[in-house]
Amino acid sequence: MSLRFIGTTSEEGDCPTLYEIPETDEVLVQGDRETDPEHLVVLRDVKPSETFVRVPRSLLTRYAPRTETPRLTPFAEVTGLFKEFCHTAWRLETRRGYASDRKSPKWQRWAAGEDIAAEPDAAWHENVRAQVAEGKRFDRVRLVDQPATRGQEFLAATAPRNVAAGEDIRNLTRAEAEALRLPDDDFWLFDSKILARFAFDEDDTTLGVYVTEDPAEVLAACQARDAAWHYAVPTREFQREVRSRM
Image (cartoon, rainbow, N blue to C red; front, side, top):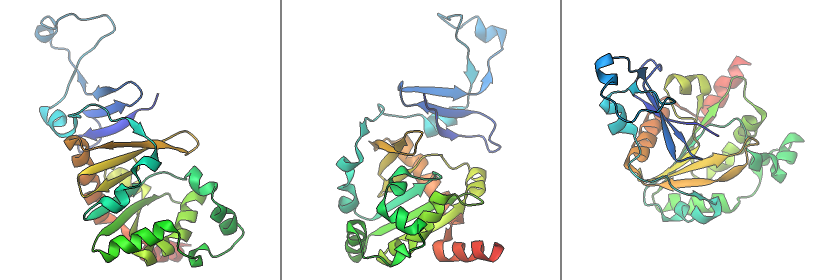
């Protein structure tokens, strides 16, 4: 079963921390073990398998989910969000590769050395142009390993088409993302209100999305967005920096 990092109030990244186990609808809490004898004798109905940890109240008030776990929804069922949002659609891309990219005909053409950035607009680009023309924003931050993976190199090759359509795509190294304590999740955040968090299998295939307006989850996504956007570098500038180090 998977374990998803939710958030921590520790500046040094040790503890306390909250995690989610999506398959069981449970939350795992990391903290210092409770050892005070006066407290332990008061605890009720303790099973031999149980233990207890201390965490600050702020951890729970900031990150503990307020609503039931959302159901896993096929991505095709939420595509309307990309037209219905009012102001901003913001994406965090954290994976080292995506099965949908590797299965795309563009992947083979790119691998053969073709310039896929010069290809005609697809439905995605047409919608971006239409929404941007109405004053809306499409922004995303992509994490990049050093050296970049093949999947990340492919995304870098496709970025100019997205940027030309109206997206603002920026890049952040994975080391910087880890220092900022960014989540491992891929997600879209619409209008700082609706969060669509991706689920993947071990082969990078999209299983669906968890769509929620849970205040704690949306707040955590907004905090991740603000930190990532502050430090991320625009695509063209990032690519120049990479080439200058080669």
